[in-house]
Length: 474
Image (cartoon, rainbow, N blue to C red; front, side):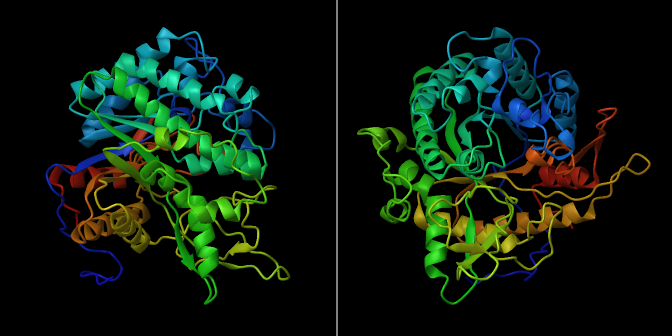
């Protein structure tokens, strides 16, 4: 596409509309701590992180950023940054500790205080129902490969929707179901750590079903006029060879169209079903499921960090698997074992992910072309760098540069007609980065994990200026 502006995406002075919603994002298990307090039940991430050898340094989310006990301090920090929105997730095990049945009022009260605190400070609450912390008893009963989990999720959605449905601005059903299904049940690098391709594909469908059922329940109980949403980590898949067209198609089907197909079109792609026929017959898709899944949403959340480059594997040479999701026993790409992910040119973030702001522009424009009437929002974008606290300051010029270039990409996408409604930077604070523990820092606020003191990084001050002016700072 023809793009005006700097080829390196380092434009200055670009302005966003006044109603473009600027905020930041977190997830419950990554920041809250207090895992065994006030009636919260165990989640799959409690179990996973306490299993020796699965998380770097044996780190767990037991304390994390202690956000549960520092709620008012963190809310004041958000106000100090000028955030217009805050995208948080609700811990299912705090609300329904065993996954079904008894409701924990103390958990509801915590999120009610959070939402009220946001509103009192002029910050719009964006609530995500599921950011990976499945109640452990539901995993014991089969987890996401078990259809019943989708119905339990709908019950939970009804409970929390009833409690907060007069105040939440945007409801998001799922965060990155790709990770829940393929990393949790396929490659095993995320909780619950299972490595079965058929289970991963069953999980894909039951997460899709959970999304649809939850939307139905939320619409019954909310009393304000919120937006309804889902957040997908859609992959930008690029060819790494002249004959890579089929490899690109296969990975696009597994990574992207397995979710956008049923959610936005009411169907699974025929090529996805054919590619995976040797793994599953998809008999878990029952009559009426696709109708339940295919519901209108007000905004599609888009998480973006990097691109992927693929080509066919010749079956002889050492297979590259630079998909950005770590080495694993199992594969997060069931049915595509003959596709290899080749290393991409840098520079890279500390996660080893390539920095490619053009990928965000391409993704947003592609989504607009596929679903012209669907409003979008960037619900996560950010980067991990090796931050150092030095005399009360964190000089993270690399992160400022990263954000500046990706905001430029978003602005250019809007210039191509993309209906982009906002941007939530990942992450508000440094936090528990899943299997990487506390070794990767994504925050615009630095957290000292000994004292738990928060320090706004240079990137946080830069972002506060962007929020205040709606203009990308020089």
